[in-house]
Image (tube, rainbow, N blue to C red; front, side, top):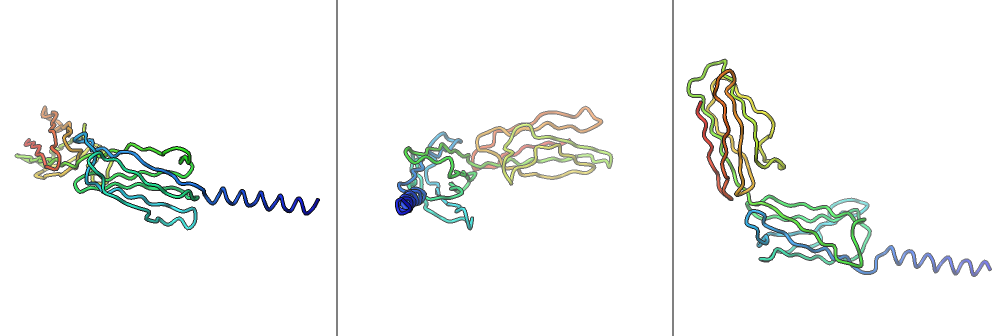
Length: 209
């Protein structure tokens, strides 16, 4: 009886270790879209990285260049990880980073993701106080414009005092509106300014007060 129990224990342990070690492979695929021009993100480099459970240092897996349809596919052996990371980069486009945790991956079906990004554009905000006084108070706040990147200009209220002759450059999504509300406090001078910022270009917005 004891020998039978030992044999069964060894068999069960073998089955458990065999399953955990990872038969099969994960298929991670999808499409990357250029949202500015509504096309596949052709020419972009897409890379896959993995983060092991321990040590959790990032490891490169594979990369490729996207074709005109923007479709991609990675086939990776099933192994226990914390997560995978997909990164997509192309000059003059906002980069993409997508985290895929091991727990969400399916072995018996494809793991499909739809990703998209925008071409970059810029707006130059030109503010000039033509007759400055020390008491002058100029204030503006962004109404429309990209706000989810490290290079983006703030969406909070901006204040300037006294003499002002400056140009502020703000990054934006290509072919979209950038707009702001402004006030010269204690005067009737207030209003709304906007411009469509063309992809890969810098659009000027002027305000003299």
